Amino acid sequence: MSRELDTGQQGNQSGSSSEPQKQEQKEYQEFAGKYRPKPKLFTNCLKAFIIGGLICVLGQLLQMMYIQWFGFKPDHAGDPTVATLIFLACLLTGLGVYDNIGQWAGAGSAVPVTGFANSIASAALEHYTEGYVLGVGGNMFKLAGSVIVWGTVSAFVVGVIRTVITMLT
Amino acid sequence: MANKRIGQRTFSFNGEVRVIASAAVGGPKEGEGLLQKELDHIYPDNYAGQDSWEKAEQKMMEDAVDHAVKKASLSNDQVDLFLAGDLLNQNISASFTARTHQIPLMGMFGACSASMLTLTTGAVLVEAGFCNTAVVAASSHNCTAERQYRYPTEYGGQKPDTAQWTVTGSGAAILGKKGSGPRVRFATIGKVVDMGLKNPFDMGSAMAPAAVDTIEAHFKDTGREPKDYDLIVTGDLASVGHPIASQLLAERGYDMGKNFRDCGLMIYTEDQQSFAGGSGCASSALVTYSHLIDEMKRGNLSRLMIVATGALMNPVSYQQGESIPCVAHAVTLEMD
Image (tube, rainbow over all chains, first blue to last red; front, top):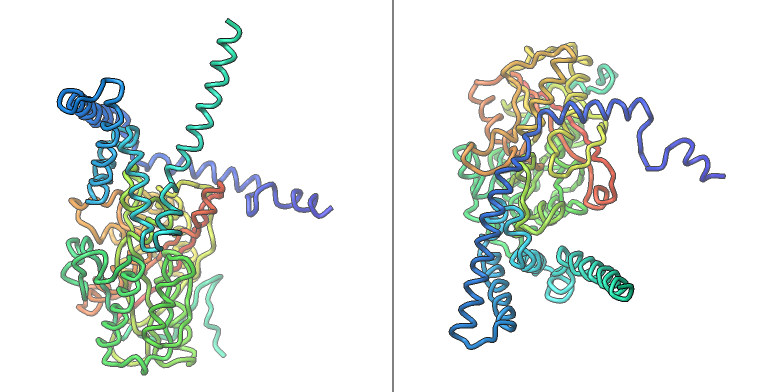
C-alpha cells in the first residue's frame, strides 16, 4: 500500500521531477550543451596514438634489451619488460608527473599497463595518510579493482565461448 | 518589529552590520595567479607545513581566521561566534579550526555556497544582537576535494575542458557593528535548483540555473536592477556556466552587462591550467575576502553583489545516478 503511494506520487527516483519539470530540464540541457567546449576527438586520438605508441616502442626496446643482454628467452622476456614499465609508471606517479602526462595523452597513457600501474600507485599514495592497512591496503585497488574483477569475468566468459565453439567444431 | 524580510526570500539588513575586516590565504597556484598581491598569505606548497592535505586545509582556515581577527584588532576571545563551512565530509575543516581557536562554532554546509551562507547567517545574528562580533569562514583544498569527490590526485585520467580546478585556500571575515567596512545590505537565500545534470566534471552548467534563480529573485524582491550594482559576481560558474547564466538572465529581461563576472575566473591567469576555471568554497571566499573587499575599501566599488553557487551532491549520490542539485546564496555589500 505505502509502496503504491510512493511510486504514485514520487516516481521511481527519490526527488525525481514531474513531467513539465523534466521537459524544462531537457530543454535546459540542450541549451547548456551549446556552451560546452566540444571534446577535441581528433587531437585527443592523435595524442593518444603517439604516447600510447611511444610506450609500446619503449616496451619493445626493453624486451629486446632483456633478450639481447640479459639472456632471456623471447617468450619469457615479457615479464621483466612489464615489471620495468610498471616500475617507471609508479616512479613517475610518485614524482607527480604521470597525471600531467595523462591529461595530455588521455587513453594513450591510460590503456597500457603503465596506466594500470598509475591507478594503483596513485590510490596507494592518496590513502597512505590513513595508514598502511586500511589506507594503502584497503584503497590501493580502488580504481584497478574494477579492471581486475571485470577483466577476469570477461576472460571467463570468452573462455566459455571458446570452449563451446571448439567442442562444436 | 519591522519586517526584515522583503519579497519572497530576501533579508533586508538595517545597515548596522559591517564587514569589519577580512582575510584570505591561498596555496602556491593561487599565489601565482591574479590575487597574488592581495592574499594575506601564500603557502609555498599544498601541504602548508602539515603532513596531510586535510590538515593543510584546516591550517589554511585557521590562518585566515587569525589574519582576519588580527586585522580587526581583536583577539579570539573577543569574537563571539564562528560560522564556517567547507567541502570535506562532516565539515571537518570548520570543526577542527574551531577546536584550535576555541570560538563557539556553528558549522554550516552549503558546498561552494558556504561563503555567503555563513556571511548571511553571521550578519543576521549580529544584527539581531545574539552576538557582537562573528567570524565567518570558508575553505577548500584542491587535493582534499579531488580525493573526496573524484579520483586520487596523481591519477592520470584525462579531464574534459568543462572540469574546474578546486581552489586551495580559505577566506574569513569579521562581522560587527563597528568600523568603516562595507555594510551588509541584502541577502537572498537560494532555492535548490536541479536541471537534471549528472556530470561531476561539468559543475558550471549544473549550477548556472541556481545562480540565475537567486539573482532574479533578488531583483524582484528588492526592485533593484543589474545597473544598481557596480559589480555582480557569481561564485564558481567558470567559463562554461557563467555565459549560460548571463544568457538565461538576458532571456528573463536582465541585461547584466560587463559588470557581471565570476570569481572562478578571477583567480588564475590564462596560462595556469585550471580547465574552465576555479571552483570550491575558496573560489568566492578568496576573491570576496581579498580583492573585492579591498576594492570597496579603496573606493573602486560601492555596491557589490556576491552570488555564491554550490553543488549539493556527494560522491555516492552521483555514482547512484542522481542528478546534481544546486543552490546559490546572494549577499550585497555597500560602502558608505
